[in-house]
Image (tube, rainbow, N blue to C red; front, side, top):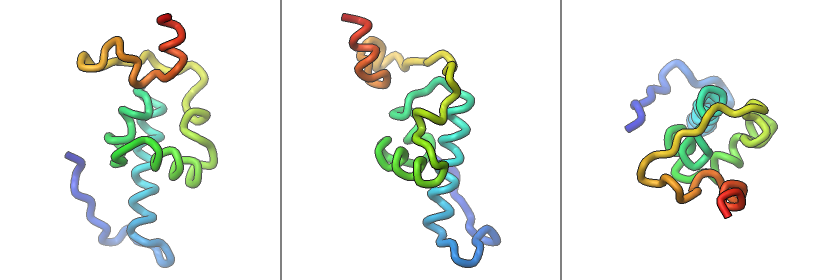
Length: 100
């Protein structure tokens, strides 16, 4: 469960708490993209999004580039939870094509 966030003293005039929260979630996603090999389906819940699509939209709006372009050119090794090993859930069409 994510920690409870206090907005006291963090709000700037003209910025809603919701906008601040979106920016914090995107900042967390940036951190995970930079330091892990996790896919967006795994990063989204850790950054406070229920599914990856809103993360993609907010990320592009706030950062100016989609998450896929933001990640370093040589991503870190990926880790696959035992529950999804071999299913290709986080690696998309590329992994499925390679396994065929």
